[in-house]
Image (cartoon, rainbow, N blue to C red; front, side):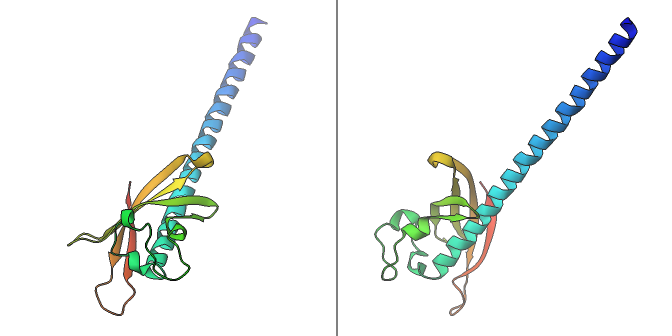
Length: 146
């Protein structure tokens, strides 16, 4: 009797251990998927902001973001549409735009806006400007990390 009790206790504990490991692996996977979704959303947001800087907000391309307030590029278009938006159900905001200087590309810093306005994930993007006249003003966007 004591042997069977000990054996069943060992089986119960090992089963709980396996279940705990499986739950931890699942939680880790969900966290990784959430982070990947956020990073993809930021990359899409960068493309969206850059498209706007190539189009209706082209006049802001050579100004740092601190000087965007009050600028009018086109009639009826305000900078609020540029500095905040949403992609794939996630809200973002432009934290900073630094125009290209000398040999350095322009830099765009974006941040996801979490629930209740909390700050979320931030990423910096390098934005290469076209050098030829008549071409699209922006030629490439690549992530730089934080």
